[in-house]
Amino acid sequence: MSHLISLNRLARLVGLPRSVLQRMAQSGDLATFDGQVEFAEVMRAFPNAKFTNDSEIRRVEEIKDAALNKIVDRPDLPDAGVLMGRLQQLGGDFARLEARLRHQALVHGWLEVKLKALADEGELPRAASEELVQWFKRELETTSGDTERWVRLLTRERLMRVMSAGVTVLPRGLTFETQGNETLLEAGLRAGLSFAYGCSNGNCGDCKARVVQGEVVKVRPHDYALSEAQRTKGVTLMCSYAPVGDVVIEAAIAGTADIARQTITARVRSIDRLGSNVMGLNLLTPRSERLQFLAGQRVQVQFGDCLSECSIASCPCEERRIELHVGSSEPEAFASLARGELKPNDEIELVGPFGDFVLDEVSTRPLIFIAQGSGYAPIKSLLQHALSLDHAPSIALYWLAGPDGHYQDNLPRSYASALDNFSYIAVTRERPYDDVLGEIAARTEFAVSNVYAAGQNTFLELARSRLIMAGMPQHQWHAEVVDAGNTSQLVATTRPA
Image (cartoon, rainbow, N blue to C red; front, side, top):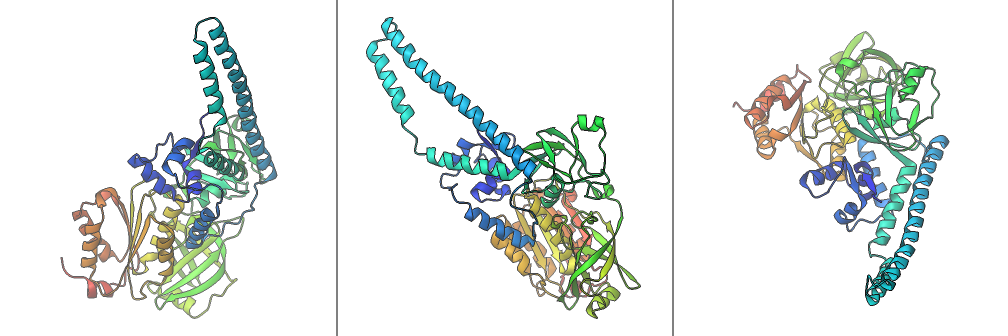
């Protein structure tokens, strides 16, 4: 009987990022079949992995969650209906295995009888027949040294099947896992997928998806009524249903053109002075009206009589939490926050999203992020999104300090400590940009990397031209102009070409 495990689950079992396993598969170090790995291949590729104690795996996950600043609000156990369905599936698996073993036990008995009959009929020498029977018995009674590891691996994998379910999204082939009592929509958004949705609470029907394979069960109430024809075709609401076991669904992934402008009233959680020229505004949207946006986009915020457009520094995977960075290039908004005119628990209106500086979610190329000064805000959003997706084989962040230095330096440093496929290079203000770009160009394979840069317009033009000269294709360059009015630093530190 063949036993297969998904890359998502295997990553959790062996405590490695999924992107590392993808690199192993691409290099031929790990044999995969449609994104899954045979248990025997797991035993071969990870001979030193331990499957009895998941404390090390939990430790890595905790570091990653802390680094990503995500608090996933979910119970340890799935919904009762989901849990019952998964236990029934697991029971069915073991019943089929038990039936197969019983049949094999019968075949073993028949084989001994058949060999003796062949000896009696002179078709086989009796000594050879008896020797074959004894050898067969010895082999059945002797267990391989890997048997115990196989049992531990299978035990852990089956427990994962009870606690979680794997989801494959067509037509793109993206994958994620639901944990605990999460719905398809909640788990997909947490994993960084930009599903098309509206209210997220069962009223609008915008999150419809079709179940191609597997079974889902209702875990949240919804008012939107699916037609009989839709139910027959397997259509479900992702915001209200959870997978019983591993499922394949067909669902729309939203692009910038698919997300409507929204007006949402959010509550202020905290206001932080990140530097002399940057204020951090942390917001919480209502449970029934979360802001739909893509990582890297912007929103408009009303500060008294002033309407400002701010970069979103958080990721859609952070659910209802929104982080904005307000720079001194928005003087009225910045001054309003600095004077304390907005306080925790105050309400503020958001309008958006705006912009098309977003991640290519399908690409599995290495990612290069370049932030100049306060251009770190949209880059931080994209970076968190990329880490949630876990598709890129490697990620590098170059942060060229602005007047406030690296005002959230502890965050990318924590990423670098927790993740072996992430590197962070902090560049001081004293270094000329042209020298820095030359160094980046020399140490990066731009021909195979996607580059995302945010900063002043003049810097971005300089960076684009230098990196294209280094071999970067134009279509792999993505840029966002931030703090366009402040060019004093650029003039002071950039040498002519």
